[in-house]
Every structure is written in structure tokens, then in C-alpha cells.
Length: 142
Image 1 (cartoon, rainbow, N blue to C red):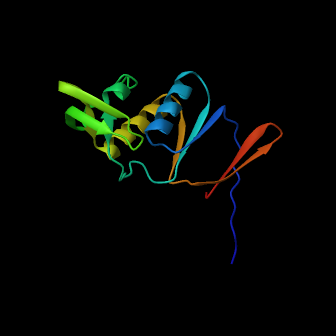
Image 2 (cartoon, rainbow, N blue to C red):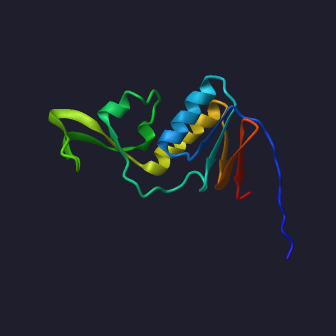
């Protein structure tokens, strides 16, 4: 059996691992600020995500783009209680947030990152990070 190894070396200002909402949004802002950014997602994009797609009213203030194509339902009159006893209450028919289709929403965020200049590698899993001479080397399954 022959083992094939491809070695591509490039320098980036930032590397983001995972293109869920946090990773894709961080990638976008880094790219928008002029940094050279590489982002990895271990699955093909767009990809299905089993996680719920609730976006709180507080989080809405952080989303400065049109994601209406991904909205499935508006949330009103929400009461959420956490394990530690804290709670969030949105009475009086106020908008508490939205439920979004995660596949569509996450893909909108990833496309936005790409549009800001981020180099996105999907279907590529990071398997190793190591520091060498003040730099971080990333090894993937590719």
C-alpha cells in the first residue's frame, strides 16, 4: 500500500476551525478587517445540523445582514429557564427571537465569510495543531 501525502504551505493571519455560527461570523469579521483568514469545516457545506436554530433577540443585534431566507418562525412570549436557576422572560408579545433553518443559516454565514475574502475549506478535518518558531502549523486529513 502506498501512502500519499500532499503538503501545501501558506501563511495566514488567523485560522478558524469550525464554520458554525460563531466560527463563520468570526471568520467574516476577521476577513472584513483585512486579515488573511483560513477557515475549516469538517463536513461539506451546506451541511445539516441537528442543533436547534434559535436566535435570541439579544443575538439579533450582532447579526448585521439579511438572513430572512433562513427564518422559519418568529418567537414571541418566551420564558427560558437554565439549569443554574437563571431565566429569561419575554412577556407582552415581544419578539424574543427567531427559529432558523440551520443548514440555510450556517451556509449564509459561510458565504458571507467567503465574500469577505476568507479561504474556506469544507470537508476537511483538522487533525493536528503544533507551534513552530512562533507560528502555528495545521495538519488536516487532506
